[in-house]
Length: 107
Image (cartoon, rainbow, N blue to C red; front, side, top):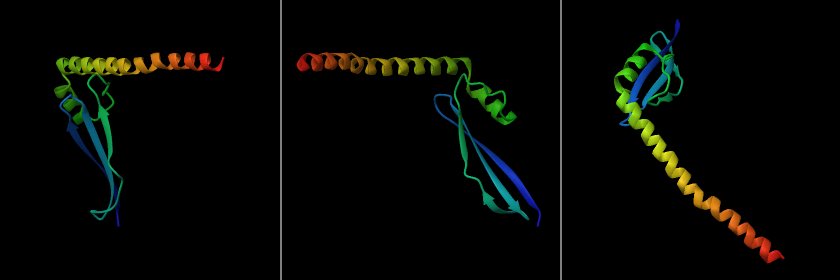
C-alpha cells in the first residue's frame, strides 16, 4: 500500500502566442489513482516572465513567443485598451451633463 503523488503537465498554445500550462496532481495507491486534484490552467502571455517554469514550459514559450509574436501581442493589447478607453469616454462625458441638468431642475 504505497502512496505516490504524481503531477502531470500539459500545454495548450493559442494563436496569439499565449501558452496555457495545465497541471493536474494525482494520488496513486499501488499504481491506481485514488484521488485527483482538479486541473489548474495558467496562462503565460507573450512578454510574461516564465523563468520560474518547468524546462519543458520554458522551451515551448521560447519557441512560440518570438519577438514578432510579442510585438503583435503588445500591439493588439494596446489597441484593445484604446478601444475600451474610447468606449468609456462618452459615458464619462455624459455623466457630468446629466448632473448639471439635475442641478438646474432642482433650483
